[in-house]
Image (tube, rainbow, N blue to C red; front, side, top):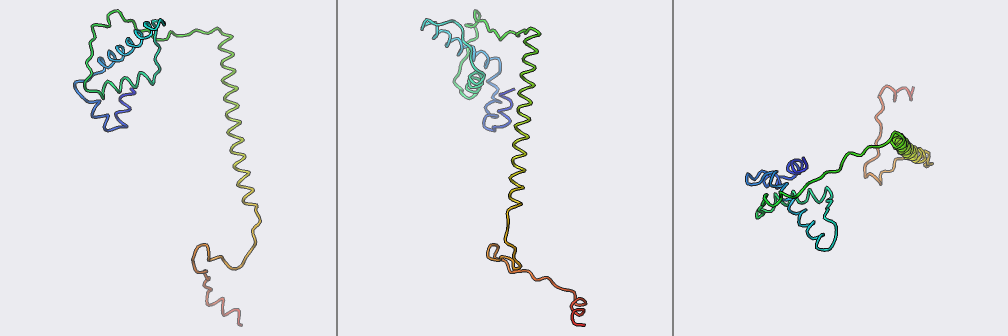
Length: 163
């Protein structure tokens, strides 16, 4: 899904992603190979034989697989590698209720903050509208560079003035 979305957004990557010599199965094997290398490095340092990559790291490796044309993947060396995803976590009813209340509180706080922000913007606009301006009968033509407009009066009205 990530790679397909990236291909739609980036025409250059779309051409690379459409390479018939590359496929998703080999992409996954490539990512496994890179993770196996990390596990091996950790073991050499005396660390755990577990690596938990971030999503960004996985996506970067997937893109690297498609971009780098010299990558060769040997799937046979992964027979003893086990991929494990995070197990679903179960919560007690008390924990669920507490999380629900926290989520409601956060939502309420967010809504209140948004309302305060809108109210503040409304007050600023109202304050600007109330700013005193010096009334003038002559329009300021310096700012716009326009000639002052003179309204045309109806001839009949002009005649009424002189009768």
